[in-house]
Image 1 (cartoon, rainbow, N blue to C red):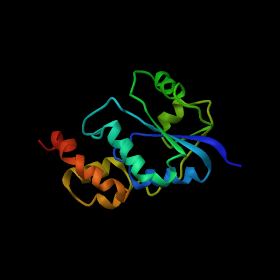
Image 2: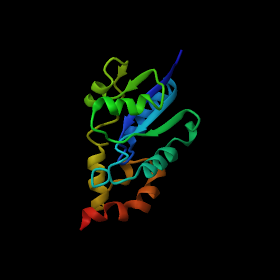
Image 3: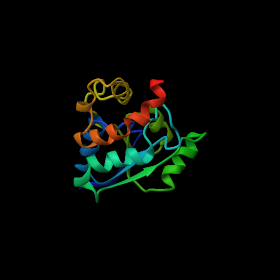
Image 4: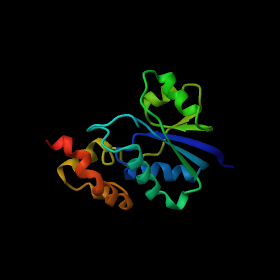
Length: 163
Protein backbone atom coordinates (compact mmCIF):
# COMPACT_ATOMS: atom_id res chain seq x y z
CA UNK A 1 0.00 0.00 0.00
CA UNK A 2 1.27 3.44 -0.95
CA UNK A 3 1.83 6.05 1.69
CA UNK A 4 -0.20 9.14 1.07
CA UNK A 5 2.08 12.13 0.57
CA UNK A 6 5.79 12.76 0.07
CA UNK A 7 7.39 16.18 0.33
CA UNK A 8 10.29 17.03 -2.02
CA UNK A 9 12.00 20.41 -1.63
CA UNK A 10 14.45 22.11 -3.96
CA UNK A 11 15.32 25.41 -5.57
CA UNK A 12 14.93 23.99 -9.11
CA UNK A 13 17.26 26.63 -10.58
CA UNK A 14 16.55 25.17 -13.12
CA UNK A 15 14.54 21.97 -12.93
CA UNK A 16 16.71 19.26 -14.49
CA UNK A 17 16.48 15.58 -15.39
CA UNK A 18 17.89 14.57 -12.00
CA UNK A 19 14.98 16.31 -10.24
CA UNK A 20 12.50 14.83 -12.71
CA UNK A 21 13.82 11.30 -12.20
CA UNK A 22 13.62 11.62 -8.40
CA UNK A 23 10.09 13.03 -8.48
CA UNK A 24 8.84 10.43 -10.98
CA UNK A 25 10.13 7.71 -8.64
CA UNK A 26 7.99 9.27 -5.90
CA UNK A 27 4.87 9.04 -8.07
CA UNK A 28 5.45 5.28 -8.10
CA UNK A 29 5.51 5.09 -4.31
CA UNK A 30 3.17 7.83 -3.07
CA UNK A 31 -0.34 8.94 -3.90
CA UNK A 32 0.65 12.63 -3.84
CA UNK A 33 3.85 14.63 -3.99
CA UNK A 34 4.25 18.09 -2.51
CA UNK A 35 6.95 19.94 -4.44
CA UNK A 36 8.42 22.78 -2.41
CA UNK A 37 10.11 25.51 -4.42
CA UNK A 38 12.56 27.22 -2.11
CA UNK A 39 14.24 30.63 -2.09
CA UNK A 40 11.22 32.33 -3.71
CA UNK A 41 12.39 35.66 -2.29
CA UNK A 42 15.89 35.45 -3.78
CA UNK A 43 17.08 36.75 -7.15
CA UNK A 44 20.56 36.67 -8.64
CA UNK A 45 23.02 34.39 -10.38
CA UNK A 46 22.30 31.47 -8.02
CA UNK A 47 18.55 32.10 -8.18
CA UNK A 48 17.95 33.40 -11.71
CA UNK A 49 14.43 32.02 -12.24
CA UNK A 50 11.35 33.38 -10.48
CA UNK A 51 8.92 31.21 -8.56
CA UNK A 52 6.45 31.40 -11.45
CA UNK A 53 9.09 30.38 -14.01
CA UNK A 54 10.10 27.39 -11.89
CA UNK A 55 6.45 26.43 -11.33
CA UNK A 56 5.90 26.59 -15.09
CA UNK A 57 8.91 24.29 -15.60
CA UNK A 58 7.51 21.75 -13.14
CA UNK A 59 3.99 21.91 -14.58
CA UNK A 60 5.36 21.42 -18.13
CA UNK A 61 7.38 18.39 -17.03
CA UNK A 62 4.65 16.63 -15.04
CA UNK A 63 1.47 17.18 -17.11
CA UNK A 64 0.75 13.45 -16.91
CA UNK A 65 0.67 13.69 -13.09
CA UNK A 66 -1.23 16.99 -12.79
CA UNK A 67 -3.67 15.73 -10.15
CA UNK A 68 -0.99 13.99 -8.09
CA UNK A 69 1.19 16.90 -7.02
CA UNK A 70 0.95 20.26 -5.38
CA UNK A 71 3.52 23.05 -5.66
CA UNK A 72 4.17 25.51 -2.88
CA UNK A 73 6.76 28.26 -2.65
CA UNK A 74 8.70 29.16 0.47
CA UNK A 75 11.06 32.06 1.07
CA UNK A 76 14.44 31.87 2.73
CA UNK A 77 13.96 33.08 6.30
CA UNK A 78 16.27 33.78 9.22
CA UNK A 79 15.79 30.52 11.09
CA UNK A 80 15.54 26.82 10.31
CA UNK A 81 12.45 26.52 12.53
CA UNK A 82 10.64 29.34 10.72
CA UNK A 83 11.52 27.80 7.34
CA UNK A 84 10.11 24.42 8.44
CA UNK A 85 7.00 26.16 9.84
CA UNK A 86 6.50 27.93 6.48
CA UNK A 87 6.09 24.47 4.95
CA UNK A 88 4.22 22.63 7.71
CA UNK A 89 1.75 25.51 7.93
CA UNK A 90 0.81 25.05 4.26
CA UNK A 91 0.75 21.29 3.65
CA UNK A 92 0.45 17.90 5.32
CA UNK A 93 2.76 15.04 4.36
CA UNK A 94 3.88 11.62 5.55
CA UNK A 95 7.56 11.64 4.60
CA UNK A 96 10.32 14.07 3.63
CA UNK A 97 12.37 13.03 0.62
CA UNK A 98 15.74 14.77 0.64
CA UNK A 99 19.41 14.22 0.16
CA UNK A 100 20.15 17.65 1.59
CA UNK A 101 21.59 17.57 5.12
CA UNK A 102 20.23 20.99 6.03
CA UNK A 103 16.68 20.05 4.99
CA UNK A 104 16.96 16.78 6.92
CA UNK A 105 18.16 18.72 9.98
CA UNK A 106 15.23 21.15 9.70
CA UNK A 107 12.80 18.21 9.69
CA UNK A 108 14.49 16.21 12.42
CA UNK A 109 11.82 14.02 14.01
CA UNK A 110 10.00 13.43 10.72
CA UNK A 111 10.38 10.33 8.59
CA UNK A 112 13.14 11.16 6.10
CA UNK A 113 14.21 9.11 3.10
CA UNK A 114 16.87 9.82 0.49
CA UNK A 115 15.73 10.17 -3.10
CA UNK A 116 17.12 8.04 -5.87
CA UNK A 117 19.15 10.65 -7.76
CA UNK A 118 20.20 10.32 -11.38
CA UNK A 119 23.93 11.02 -11.84
CA UNK A 120 24.31 14.06 -9.51
CA UNK A 121 27.65 15.07 -11.05
CA UNK A 122 26.01 15.44 -14.46
CA UNK A 123 22.63 16.77 -13.35
CA UNK A 124 23.74 19.64 -11.16
CA UNK A 125 21.89 22.96 -11.28
CA UNK A 126 25.01 25.07 -10.63
CA UNK A 127 26.75 23.42 -13.58
CA UNK A 128 23.64 23.75 -15.76
CA UNK A 129 23.28 27.48 -14.96
CA UNK A 130 26.89 27.99 -16.02
CA UNK A 131 26.28 26.13 -19.28
CA UNK A 132 23.15 28.20 -19.96
CA UNK A 133 25.06 31.41 -19.25
CA UNK A 134 27.83 30.48 -21.69
CA UNK A 135 25.46 28.90 -24.24
CA UNK A 136 27.16 25.50 -24.13
CA UNK A 137 25.22 22.22 -24.33
CA UNK A 138 22.70 22.46 -21.49
CA UNK A 139 19.57 21.43 -23.40
CA UNK A 140 20.09 17.67 -22.94
CA UNK A 141 20.33 18.10 -19.14
CA UNK A 142 16.80 19.43 -18.68
CA UNK A 143 13.42 18.03 -19.75
CA UNK A 144 12.72 18.89 -23.40
CA UNK A 145 9.49 20.61 -22.34
CA UNK A 146 11.37 23.31 -20.45
CA UNK A 147 13.99 24.18 -23.08
CA UNK A 148 11.63 26.79 -24.61
CA UNK A 149 10.86 28.19 -21.14
CA UNK A 150 14.54 28.66 -20.37
CA UNK A 151 15.22 30.07 -23.85
CA UNK A 152 12.38 32.57 -23.43
CA UNK A 153 13.75 33.87 -20.15
CA UNK A 154 17.51 33.30 -20.35
CA UNK A 155 18.43 36.67 -21.88
CA UNK A 156 16.77 38.58 -19.04
CA UNK A 157 17.67 36.02 -16.39
CA UNK A 158 21.39 36.04 -17.09
CA UNK A 159 21.79 39.66 -18.23
CA UNK A 160 23.24 40.71 -14.87
CA UNK A 161 25.77 37.85 -15.06
CA UNK A 162 27.01 38.76 -18.52
CA UNK A 163 27.75 42.42 -17.84
